[in-house]
Structures are given as structure tokens and as C-alpha cells.
Amino acid sequence: MEKAYVTNDPVFSVLDKSQRLSSPGEVGPGQQTQAQPQRFGRKTLGEILVERKKITEEQLREALRIQVQRGGQQKVGQILLESELVDQTDILQGLAQQLELPYLDLLPINDIDAELVRDLSIGFCSQNLVMPISRDSTGVTVAVNDPLNISAVDDLRLILGSTIFRVVCPKSTIESAINNVFERQDMSRETNQGLATEEGDDLAGLEEATDLLHDTEDAPVRREVSTIIRRAISEKASDIHIEPFEDRVSVRLRVDGSLREVRTIPKKYQANVTTRIKILGKLNIAESRIPQDGRISLRVGGRDCDVRVSSLPTKFGERIVMRILDKSSGVRELSASLPEKVMRPFEALIHSKHGIVLVTGPTGSGKTSTLASSLMHINKPDVNIITVEDPVEVALPGVGQVEVNEKAGLTFAAGLRSILRQDPDVVLIGEIRDSETAQIAVQAAMTGHLVLSTLHTNDTASSVTRLADLGVEPFQITTTVLGVLAVRLMKRVCVTCRELTTHTPEELALLNLTPERVAGKKLYKARPNGCSSCKNLGYSGRAGIYELLVFDEAIRQQIVKSVDGAALRKIAMTRGMTTLRDSAAERFMNGETTLEEALQKTQVDD
Image (cartoon, rainbow, N blue to C red; front, side, top):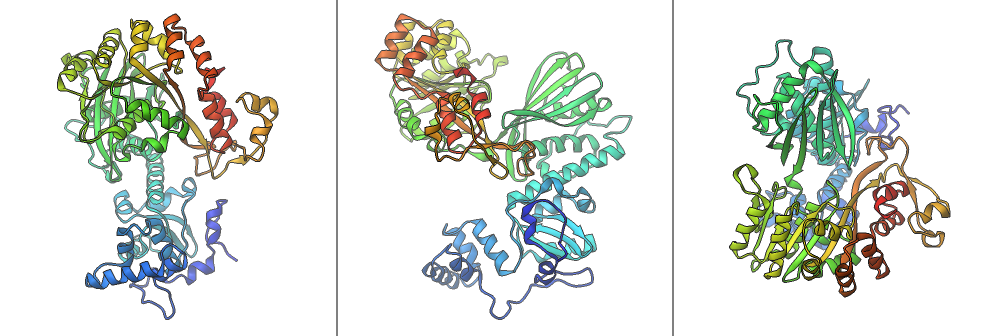
């Protein structure tokens, strides 16, 4: 049987030529599409949802009753969605079954030929949520989010001059494909035509794009910068690095904590790209000898994002780093992040009336996200919460947030002094980075305030040594600090391509595990070259690991004797503290990560 398209991806095996040609509603270039009448015997969407056990017959009857009550103007699927009886995936799968169309959760995005969208605009595809994914002698296969959007199919048939075959996909899958394919098309176009004219682009007076997903501006430099940011957001990167070298400009993305180069920019276009980014970030384009910081607010595919821009003069030009903050992602529930045995004691700490609770870890380890979740957990109308941050990364409803502005004299210490005159119950300090801030935090805790803050230390015990280095006396530490939470983010092994593995007793011992503890557990390793789902990395997404040190009487007595972190850590472990390595071992035994990743992220325990 002739296959619809040639690919190694298993999700395409559901389609063959005979299925495609017999699918209702598919049209050729000489035909006019019309809404298909319901064939005799075809089940309704509601009947399909009942058959798939997504709803009961009683729930369907109630939805039909509401539909009649509203004059028949609303579809049953919309009523079921409003009632939260089903989700969007259930509706899409039901529609696909009703229309006899394939449904695909994932697409082999990297295998889609960028030439398929040569005659289409990114605005058209993103507005209608359609994406051509394959072409053969019989026609073009298109991923659609709304299989009832007949006008979009008509437009595609006319533009592409070919028969259209539909597959139904989730919105996020189609948006990822749009970003990836159009970005590759841009790269191909720039390779053939050049990034910019030899004379350079006139960038004066350009305004930032309101939505980069719909930014079809033809100016090469604008398109290049939009493409870089759009790709970074679509791949869920946390940082963009644009680094000039002697003969080229490297563009790297930090995804799941790891940097990788995604493209290079010819050296002669470095100044144009740097200027464009500085204009968007409202930096001084005439000044290239000193570091500058700025911010870009933009929308990408309906998602609100803040991009922090930092420029740094180097030998070969200005180095640009952009930190991406996705405001639409919201704040996770604290219980969804912390494991149960850490959640209960930590929850008790943040509900204290006074004292200091610290969250420690290196840059990008999840400290700010953990603190944001903690604040929202205790945020109530009768609690006055004020923060001082540099900068405000996550907007928290019902919380007063102050942003540090050192140029204007608003430092952490100055902001903290003013905050204490605002009658707060809870104070969050973005980071304790100097002795003055540390002393004010201690005084605030001793005068009846709960203080939450972060420290840059490797583990919980070394935070005591760090506070002592900042001039906080041991007796002040024991009377104010309630506990310290260490946070790390480790990469999850890709669930699509992960491979079962075994380990020797010696390897397991590195995570303090024994063969008896892992007996019956499924242990995984990452596939060396990954798959299309994880962009050939073997890992996709990250999970948190945690170490909580609660200051009890034994810990306080040890701090009075000595602020040595190693000795304090030994006592804490004898009293049952779960270490970062213990937390990583749990993730490993649950099949979420690999032995290599668990060891790499917990080297502090060696």
C-alpha cells in the first residue's frame, strides 16, 4: 500500500494513501469545499465522547438540554468544555473520529520541508492554526487544529494548488511546527539573499513588534532578531547568548540548563543586529564602552514575555545576553513542586510569624520560582506582603513588589528600610548580597517580621558560613534563621526515546543506592542522539530536587560552637536530613532522570 509520506516517525504510520483519499471533506484544486452533511449512521460528537467514556449519558443529556435552553446557538462541545467535563484534547480526538480524520499529538517537526510554506505567511498559519507537513503526488497533508475551519482549507487549496488532506493536532503542536519551519525558511532565505544590505539597514525610529509570531516585517535585521527570539521562546529557552568572536557572531540558547549553538551571524552584520536589540531594549545605541541593562516587553503567539537585555563590551564587540521571562506561565502551586516530605516542614516554616527562611542555589536553579510559589501559598487578604527585587521577574497578584534601581539610589538595603515602614507581615528580599542587607534582614526578623530571601551557596549548611562572612553573628543566626531550602533543577530523560538500562552495584552506590532498593524499578538512560521530540538531546524538561535544613536545637547549638558548614552538614544528616543526592536518587528510581544527570547535579555531595 502506498504510504502518504516517507518518514521514520511512528506517528505517521496511522496514515496511508487509501485512508487519505477516502477521508470526507478533502478537496482537489478544481473543487469547491462545502461543509459536509452528516452521513446516515455517523455518530454525533456527544455519542463519541460517551463511547470513549469521557462523559456519561446523563451529562450528555444535560448538555443537550442547555443547548436547547440557549436557543441552539452553542455547540455541545463548547458547553461540555465550559462545564469542565472534558478538555480540549477530548474534543479534538472526538471530532477527528467523527470526521474520520487522523489525530496526532506530536509531529516530526524537524523533518517538515520548509519549502512547503514558501507561498504562505506566518500570520496566516498562526491565525488559522494550520501547518503543511508533507507533500506527495496525491496532494498536501496539513495539520489543523479546527477541522471544521472550511475557509482555511479553501485558502490552502487555492494557494498551494493541490488537494488538501487533513490531520488533527493540538494547538501547541501546530504552534511549535509554525515556529520551527518558518524559522528554517528564514535561515534558508538569508543564506541565499544575505542578512542585510552592504550599506546597512536604516534602523532609526523602528518600534518593537507587538507580536513576534505575526511579525512579517521584511527588513532583514528585524526578521533576524525576531527569528532568534521566536525560536528561543518556542524551544522554552531561558537565555539567549549573542557572542561576537573574531570572524563570526555565535547565537546560543540555554535550554533545560544547557547551552547549545543554534546559528551563526556573519561578522559584517554584527553591528546591525546589536543595534536592533539595543533599540528594542531601550539602551543607548551610541554607547558601546560600558555595560548596559534594559528590558523588552513583547508577545509571541499570544504569550506575554519579558526579555531582560544585558550588553557587555568585549574585545570583539558587545556581547548580548537576553533572559526570557514567560509571564503567561504563571506561578506553580508549591505542592506541585515540592515532594511531600519536604513540603510539610517547609510549609510550617513559611507560616511562621517571624524569622528568616532562606532558599539557596546557583544562578538558574529555581530559587525565584520557589519563593514566588511560597508567597502565593501564604498570600491572604489579611497578610501584607512586600518584596524588593532586582528585577521583578514574576508579577504576583495581591503582593506589593518594589524593583531595585541602583542608579536612583534604590538599593536592596534602602528599599528594605522603606518597606519596614509600610507595616508588612512578610518581606521578601530578592537576594542577600551584602552585609548591610543581611543586617537589616536580621533586624526585621527580630522585630516580628517573616523574611524570605535567597543566597548563592551550594547547599543548606554552607549558607550559615556565608551569613557569617557577611558579618552576621552566630547568635543572630540561631535566633532568627528558621530553615534553609537548597534547590536544583535536573534534566528529565525524554519519555519518547528513553531506553531501559541496568547499573552495577558500584554505580548505584554513587547515589547511595543498593540493588535491593532498585529491585523492580524501571531505570532509564538517555538515547545518545535523542529523537525529534527532545530535539536530539535525549532530555526534555526539568524537575526540581530539594534539601531542607530545619534549625532545631541541635543545629543551633552546633552553630554557636562553629559556623563550619561541613560539620553542620554531618550533624544534619545524622538527624535525618534528606540531601540533594537523596532527592536526585528518588527521581532516578521513579524513572524521571538518569544516573549520570543525578550525579552531575549533586556533585556538592561528593
